[in-house]
Every structure is written in C-alpha cells, then in structure tokens.
Image (cartoon, rainbow over all chains, first blue to last red; front, side, top):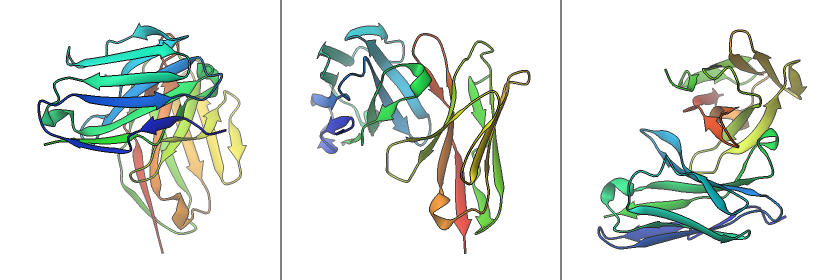
Length: 113
Length: 109
C-alpha cells in the first residue's frame, strides 16, 4: 500500500504565479479531502469529493482556489494567482468511509514570496 | 462555539508520567470519534478510534461520554517518543471529519 501520494513536497513561488498541487489517493478509497494547515488556524477543510464528485467546497477561501478530481486516482488543487497569505501546508487525505478515519498524504509545503 | 475544542497545551511531563487530554464537541449527532497524532512537520496519523464503551491500545486509553459530548485520551508510562500534537476528531455532516486544533505534549527526561 503506497498510501496517499502528494506532489510536490515543497513549492516556493512568487506572488501572482499559478500553483498546482497534486494528489493520488489510496486505491479503493472513494472520498478525497483537501486540507490546509497553518499555525494560526490549524487544519482547515477546503473541499472534499465523494466518488470524484465535489460535495462541499465551502472551505475554499476564494475564487483563486479551485479543485478537480477527473478520475478516482487523481486530484488537483490549483491557486491562481497565488498570494503570500496562501503559504501553508496543504494536505490531501482519502477514506473509504468516515467510520474508518482518513489517511493523509505527506503534504505540500507551499511558500509564496 | 468551535465544533471541537481542545486545550492547546503544551503539556510538559516527565518520562513515565500519566497524562490525560480532554476534548469537547458541539455536534450531538456526531457518530464517530478518533484521536490522531501529528509529529512536527509531518502529516496527522490515526492513533485510535474512540468507542462508546471505551477502548485501550497498549498504554493508550480513549473514552467517550456522549451525554457530556466529551472525549478523553489517557497515556500511561509516557515515553520521549510520545512527544507530539494530539488531535481530537469527530464526524460532522456527510463524510466530513472535523479536527480540533490539537494538544501539544512534550515528554522530558
């Protein structure tokens, strides 16, 4: 079991640039979640998908953020244009059902300068 | 009121001590409960589920009080390697899990 795979592990970009984060969930998991973690706000749920369909995107901070899940094995989170306040660790997690909890990827540490 | 509330700590305890963390949640409809552990600069990892009857895994004991909407985690004979942040997690609507902000534990020699 390879676990949830995220890329890149680290990303440093300049303000105004487009950033794309990638996630491969565990095979067979039908739910995928994108979280953002900062010291000030802790873990915040941005969006989640069930069976590749976005269910709740109320946590997406603004229109600069978008997420897609074109198939069961791949999802992206895009920020365009990026701003310094977007600097955080972005985690992807997958699950086969809430009774079993989530498995997190190693995260992408994003720094926008 | 936050959906999940935890004392942020830090709890500084000597090796071998027993330490307890508490957590309260606001959604009385929550059905599943968990404790996660997060090491510095790492992802959260599932430590244990919390069942109504209480459950134990080695040195770790978790308990749930539905009437008071309260969850606890007890760590006995704490080790240096137990130093981490412990996140209380409850289910929300749909398939969502809601995470507390975590309680930091530092176990010292």
